[in-house]
Length: 522
Image 1 (tube, helix red, strand yellow):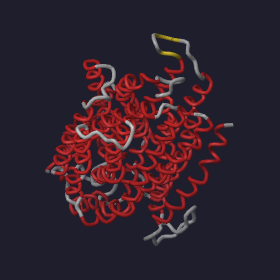
Image 2: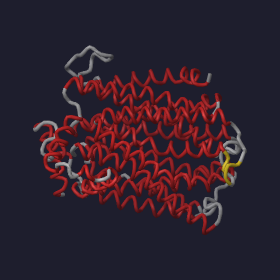
Image 3: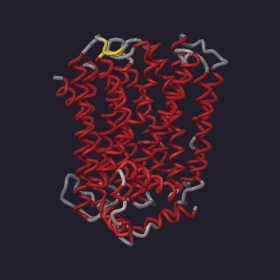
Image 4: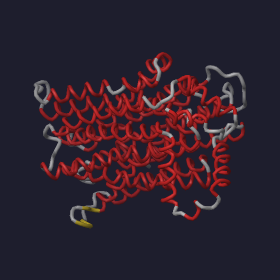
């Protein structure tokens, strides 16, 4: 009964997302076609379909995130008062899990191409989320200890939490790769903020809907996430089908590069283990394209900052909001507000910024606001608030800092990162992007989680009650700023990127890697 009722709740929001997306992409088109959206030419129709697929992905992810966070901190199903201790352990395991997903994606991409890789990985994630929802519903409050304090319900909840923190980047990075393959930089600068804004609207709607769907039970949130991914699978398949029929399929470039690589290397690579070969290819790619290496380290520092702030938020939220369902609703409203604020930036501010300010300058300016928030949080340690009771005072201070970082991430950082890939070749857009999106994102979180676990062991059970996390947030925010400045020095200007993509497209799919040669010279 849960899933049909949840589906009826999702349908109006999905329809609204489709109407908003259609309005965005129907501005400048001249080639009519018979389709769901007759006013769009094939390329923009494919872009719209992929944008809707991405929005549905994030729509479902909000349910998965809210549900898993509430389950993880639940006193009956999860870890209750010990959530902070088990949270760092879970985040430590996210990186290996992401690596396994990345290796599976790499094999799919090599064997079947980008379309099959996206379809298979999306279907797999939808199925796993549905299985977790079913398992949690069947097990219920199982308090039989399997090992030490690990009950069956805790094992399932912990595994679901780790998977939820591992799969998101795997999917949406592939969707951005498709868009980066069919747009030139000027088009990307024009449309990317709206694509990201559409996803923010979907996340915002999902965030404020959590409090309604959670009345069906916390497993219902995971079921809703699975249903939303099924819709994402349909729309992404349609985007690739349009690309194949109209001659702008990104896999054409992959096929040409694959033939050239085989003619040069013969069967030498086939003698090596897949893992060894993938690691070697990744290292060579990052050496060939320094901008990817710089973006890799920028991603690690930013995700480390988010992990510190998120750990503080989880600790303070458990103390301030002890009820499981109220905590899930609070988390949903928080991310809904974050996505709503990000949407305003994406639709009202980013289009103007992208037209007037070079992305290299935006990279240097972006960390300013989170750094100011980190300073404010440090100063607040010496200026106790008398407005709220102690738990809520600490909660809102941490939430404000986390809000600033995530808003900057959703509204600006993600768009700038995607613009980095546009002038690069197929390998950089599909392989390098996934390494950064999946591994660097999760390695930053897992690495910081290991550090936090070690500090927790040294200083005591709860490291969120003192000022340690506040000081760490300040220093990591400075490290992120330094990495952004380093990245900006390795990027092409907007005009150079435009010429590089024009050269790549003029010589046909695959080209001569002119864009990466320019990037390497820098």
